[in-house]
Image 1: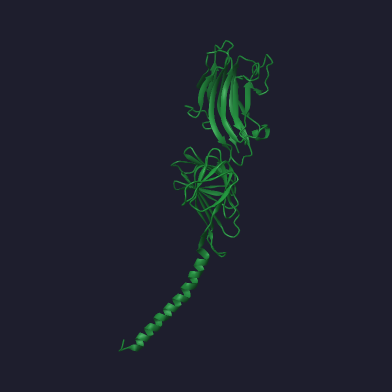
Image 2: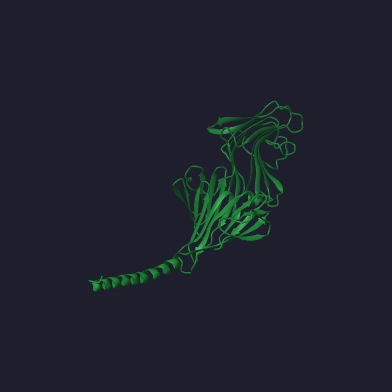
Amino acid sequence: MRKNPERVAWAVLLLAFAAFCAIVTCVPLGVRWYLLYSEREETALVESLVGTVIIEPPVGSGPIPLVKGASRQVPPGTVIHVDETSEAVITFFDHSFLRLFSGGTVRLEQLSAPKFRAGRKPNTIHLNLLAGRVRIGTAMSLKAPLAFRVTTPYGQAFLDDDGSYAIEVSGGRADVAAYRSTARVVAEGAEIALQERQRTEIVSGQPPKPPTGVARNLLANGELNAPLAEWRLFNDQGADGGDVDGRIEFVTDEGHSAVRFVRTGAQGNHCETILEQALNKQLPDPITSLVVRATVKVRYQALSGGGYLGSEYPLMIRITYRDAYDSEAEWVQGFYYQNLMGNPTVHGLQIPQDRWFFYESDNLLEVLPISPYKIVKVRVYASGWDYESLIADIGLIAE
């Protein structure tokens, strides 16, 4: 250094200049990066619509009950649970919202937004739907794009802005439906795109199924394939002292795989031979149509029409449902081919004898005196004295 002070001086000057250039360059870039990509944590507002909602904060004193009409701001990491008598609505910081129906549990994984007006990060809402059914309305992106993701035990759904969606987790599967806007659904390394008014199903351990229309059959095994594990099979003799049961058999009739109800030797005693499926399921929301479809045949009936009281047909479909106030009501449709005795047939439809008939009801949402909120159970059965009737399939189609 003493021998060549000029070289040392130049080295110091160059290092100082390099440091100056680095500062001049990096500080503005750092400030720019901070302005563009920094985020702030947001909260959500939880409100109880019905019953008591349980809120579990990420840290704190433990579960917090939220009674009907009460609301509370909650941070990311919060778990919201509603039982079979409760419902909640969650409003997010960007005005997106979620309705959590009874029996559901959701965890708020991430809620964040750009920290500054010039920020490029999206409004981020990440949820984990652990169980139950939700309706989601995503807000229109105005100041920042939206990254809305719903994780389920079986896959993930990425929702677009200004959309309307329904997602349900139950029975080892997840259903995702897009009513407005589009979505991407990912599971087991596969991805599909949902367009408006399309839905898909994710079964545990499988990729998403191909998109279909939003209409779906609320009944499991509506094709009535053996062994009918989803259906309960039994006879009801009523109170007239009869002891001759009917039978339920699997048959192939004119190329149709079907279930046959048959009873002989009744000697004027009443019996009902029943297939019953308990649903206890709320109708999808939104819903515009609820239709019953079935392929049926009546081969023989000992009683004319619907019997003396108009309640005994050789083939019947009965839906038990509840309205929003938990009042119970029923919808009944009977099928017969003859009414020689002129018995009442208020709930009956006359069809050709021993011929397959495709039945489709009117939109029940428009014709029922009480609007259904929850389907309790569905019965397909034969009623009366001696009878023989068949059904190849049944659907309770919600759209």
